[in-house]
Length: 567
Ligand code: NOJ
Image 1: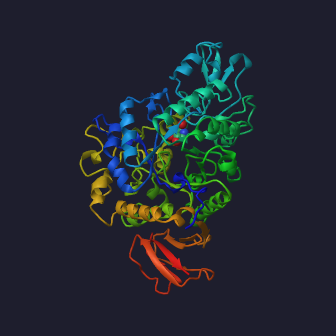
Image 2: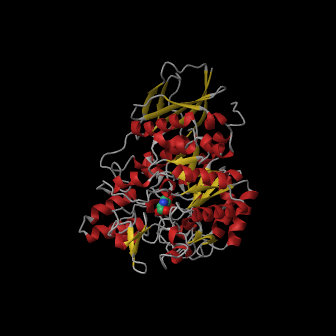
Image 3: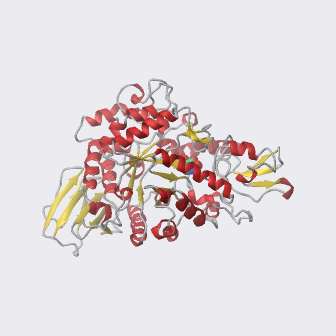
């Protein structure tokens, strides 16, 4: 495929592998993953064929929200190691041609950060204005909902200065006041610090939340989810992102990907159109909301999601980015259940095909694909059915809230089995030794027992038909084919409930992808406008059942096939 050099970017052609350090590999036996553990697995990561690593927060933190509450942005968390370990890790990545993006958590920090410790000392402290304070003499602040608060109240009272501070997340995660140019300067300096060490970019936590209407008008919302629209995209969001780009990111060969709760498809290009010089990509939340109650991030919807709904999300977003900007593709991360359990079928019968179908899907779509650790071996949900197994502030505080109001706790746990973030946070399954080879100590969270049944790296490395080996093959296919990166996308059957069929087309090539998203054999007929003289199979996760006419295809349950069509 011929692509203008001006349009090509390493971060468009790259494949991202996300590491949740707490659960990746423990080197010192304390039961918690660490940087030395990651260093010991760099050859493994390189063997996957991925190019970029996204590290969830590794900064010093009291761990109220597993590192998303940062106490010191320039120090490594003790649980994870030291700055020397970090430097060694980065050098190890560079020597293997792996790039690194860090997590940038700057909507809030920890209440133990020196800025907040100072800020709460007095109303005249130089750091007072680094946070959002509401003086008590003005009366109660207007209601704001909080994600992780047991009382769902985002304003916490602090008696030293007789004022309330704002925390959209936990009470120990006060929101930073971006309106203050001194704060912004400190954040930009901190980003330069990491760039000068050699990192290649940032994933930006809840980035649309950084700008707020600081007059705090009363909000006409009753339900938690209605608040979110008010939280995202405040009046200055584009000014700040443009400034951040100009002051920092544009000075390096780097990219940024924002976490984008509340960014709608109509607003997408305001963030990522290159002309605007703000951010390069973001994660929208449409897919992550598909199996949830409308507007509710944490509660499962009652009926099942459908394939036409799934396709529409991908098609609509592809259309948006076809005009400008660039999209990101992901099926899972540390905040959501496992891809194969959620979008595939993790029963023994369909687990292998559905895991590999999802790999085929993500690696044949337009946009930068992001894989979460363990997905390459088809790790499944934990399905914890007891509150004592959960470590996440999100599940624990919502449980508490319900207990306080005599709510239905059994129903809650049933929901969490499918919805909880913990599903994705169990230790990486390395081999069949105790605790799946994750630690020689006691793991901080339970290991899923199916590591004994082949869902582990060592077993799959030995089996050429494994989910892992297929993952590497389809990664290699994408890396050798620019049409799969840049080519136009066309969905051929938006209403089909069973098969997802699409074309990726460039000036030189046309690729047909057929995916059977179901537990039964499917029959698919190519539309008349797709004509060709020769067809060549590029990859499939199962043997070919029937494509003899090359107009009609039969696909095994969860089968994926990629064909090249020749004129
Ligand atoms: C999004 C992160 O991905 C999540 O893990 C965290 O709890 C919240 N932002 C708050 O930082």
